[in-house]
Image (cartoon, rainbow, N blue to C red; front, top):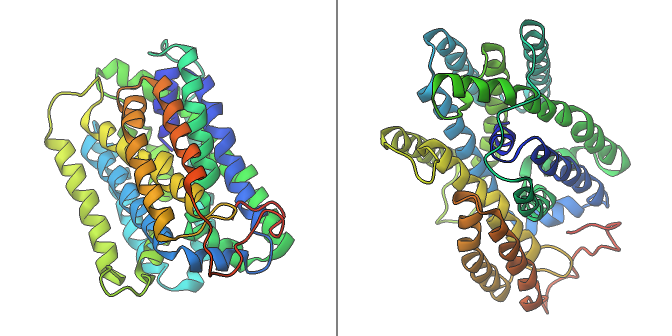
Length: 375
């Protein structure tokens, strides 16, 4: 809910569509491609560790953003809303342990976001124009392959998506993904587009860095509710663990995610100055985003898609590809020289030529057998 703000600040309004279209389409297609019976269950069973780490990183990321809001508040009264969001996080995490309440809470969070958006639109007016972007429009093209790769492939590691897909099998589940992401989720990110202008204008007037803490009070309720529910449902997956003796499970997994986020937020708060114009919280935020732009989609591309399998050889190819692409992503994401991103994505895509199908495992889910599934 904040990445589009940074993109609009740096690249202008056109960058929102490069973010939004693959984001919505990637999530919708995941639900459609995994329509075949047991396709989702097979994928999760074969790649449980990667899916677990996706939930762990996502949980830490959500908590980090919440702490960023709390640490960057500029108005004391806004703190009531932010601390209210923190209380919602704790309440939702506790309540969703009772699985029967998850659907009710999901509905409540959606209604709260819609109400907050309506109140904000009634009290304020969205600003559709912002200050001139820092980068040229040509730089936006460098973002396109990263957004396409990341948003198209990351959904296949999201255990919360798989949970939804498995609870509603067949065509009804596909329709649910189309409505859920093509209507409800799209509405949420359009709201982000509408509040980007006021947030950036406020940051400029105060002479501070862009931060989600600068949102109007109703929007802080919206953000807090979304962070709360996302954290809670991923914490539920973290608690399940995967049965490995050396890996954190249950409260240990939750605690390590929370403490990691707390440590990063505290570190960012105590750092002074900027790096290439990025304040410390935004710097760490962008590092988190690299998982969704490089690490996770590279795993899906090299170890899941088509004939891909999680073999020792393919994992080695994955590790080398990520290491080789990291300097390019650093230049693109951190240094904001986006033309570097193209070669970085090309390295990941080309690494597929080095992967090998497993010889002694059941036939993987193919495009044909899953009606076009990338799994």
